[in-house]
Structure formats: C-alpha cells, structure tokens
Length: 187
Image (cartoon, rainbow, N blue to C red; front, top):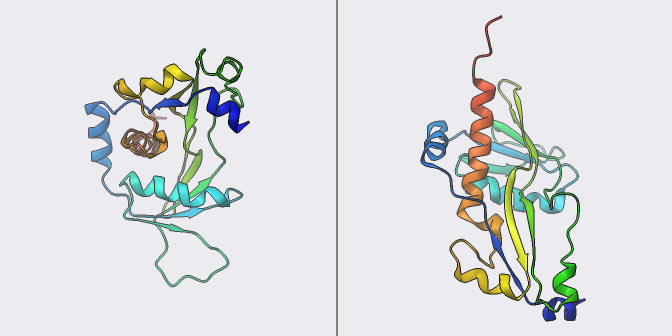
C-alpha cells in the first residue's frame, strides 16, 4: 500500500477560508471567556489535539483536562468542553482510487470536515452550546495536486494546524455563544 501511495504522487490541502472582517470583529467582541476543562469522554487519544485546538483559538485563558477521578484543588473551570467524536470526510470514508490506479496521473479531490464536534457548557448558568463539524477543507491526491502548492492557499501542511482553522473554530464558538445569549422572541 505504501508503494501505491508513493507511485500515485503526493497531494496538497486547501485549508478553510480566512474570516471576513465582520467575522473577525465578532470574535474580538466576545473577548476571553475564562477557563475551559476538556472532558475527553470516549475520545481520549484525541484529547491532547483538541486541547491544543481550543488553546490556539485564544478564546480561553486556560485549557485543562477534566479528570473526575482526581480531586482538584484548582478553582472550577468556567466552561466544560465535551468531545462528541471526530470530524472526517463527507459521506463516510474517502479513498483516492483514481490516483492509485493511474499512478497519480489522474488526480482526485475531496472535501473533508476538520476538527471535532463538541459541546461547551457554561458551568455558571448550565447553558450548553453544540459546535458541529462545519469547518471544511479540501484535499487533492496525485501529481497535479502535489504541484498545486505553488498556488495561493494550497499546502502540504495539516489544515487543522493553520491559522484559518483556529480562527474558524473561534468564530464557530463565538457565534454560537452569542446566539445562545441573545434574548429570545417576545412571548
């Protein structure tokens, strides 16, 4: 399988788009939210990656791991983030069959969801928001996508490590918090 991947060329990825000025202003208006404790749930191997993603949003003053088994002397967190799975490719798995069969001559592109779906609970109010898989990136496999890294935006780096990803994640959290805090329609 490694030989097939090598013969089919490499690929490149297109991270999510940058935030618009209005979206950037919205994230800035939220400010720092305080501390967040991450509840790993069944996704324990991915917890460290998720913690780094939350830290890079710069929305939280501190990101710590929730360990219900260990007594804590630290003050309680302002929020608890609970992992609900892992985002992936749309419509299940994705195999670059065409590049493998044609040794990379015929490229294949696919859209992928980045990050983790999770809930964020405000420990003071009990209010919970859900942040689904909504940050998209593109991946291309084959010889043509391998050289597409000269085009603006395309890279061989992990799109989840990009500044665009962290700003999109911050916007997703900020916009859901703002919507949850907005007064409802009059009754």
